[in-house]
Length: 336
Ligand code: G3I
Image (tube, rainbow, N blue to C red; front, side):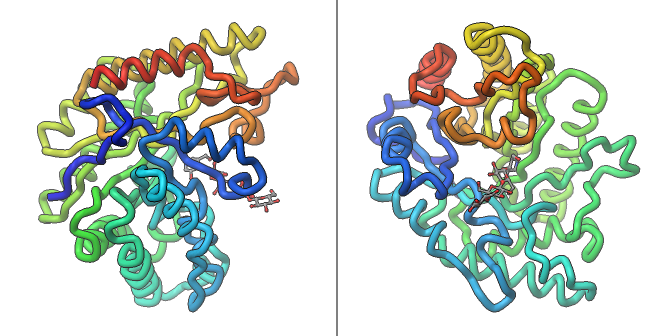
């Protein structure tokens, strides 16, 4: 069985590894951005470059260069890296979504994982094998799984197929089910946690390896974390021999009134509650943020603030100054 993610040599011994996703768009253009990842992270991963559409513009063409550069950058700095992602509903190329035949879709999925997992074997310590396969609102959406290209073509069996293929090609990588909305209080979130556990059990019952669940951690600063339910989720996974990590942590503040200080205080509270639940259940394999600085983030594009203030989702502000909550997060991780 694959071991946990390695911590960077410069981290304090026993610390929970800290990582962040990097955007290749700014990798060359912004040396200060690049330096921040070099200095702060035990783990660096490509935010977008391993997604299907970017990796595979045509069925015959694999475009590995951008992802390679990020992965090589991590290795050169002695940092771990992880893969995001084989199976997703978004960022698929048109040629893929145009496939109607079940057998064709299966062949493409298997060949994709074979080719990509093989290329990065030994270089990526974990893979988000499937990303966001749980229905957004399972009661409203009429089933536990999200309606995606892969579900329509292959049915629920695409999940074990993806895990089985990834396990066959890269026996050492941690194989992860990655999803969002697994930490808040309320029935929809209880249901989503239960579905995640159900998928884990089904894989295990079928003798298929799953090593961890990635809790994305796109935290809404106005929404309450269910600390106890999150800790219970971690304990339930642990009882099944399955790890967990925070895989895409950031804070969505569009419903928090006030200035930068008020926003950061609200972010600090929600991150602290999240860590209470996360670490309360079992020791996470890593805590990974979705970017590192407010200079670049999807949050402002997707959920801008009505007051026109810039969003403040990440550990460093747009001038690359650390927020108080980042210091607290690192002290928490250092305790292990
Ligand atoms: O690279 C092009 C650039 O050349 C062009 O000028 C620009 C114009 O819009 O687009 C750039 O590509 C964008 C890319 O991000 C790089 O910034 C794409 O349009 C945009 O769709 C893409 O969005 C990404 C999104 O996933 C879709 O793949 C976000 O960066 C990324 O943060 C987001 O990440 C997801 C996780 O994978 C899964 N969980 C949720 C998370 C947030 O939505």
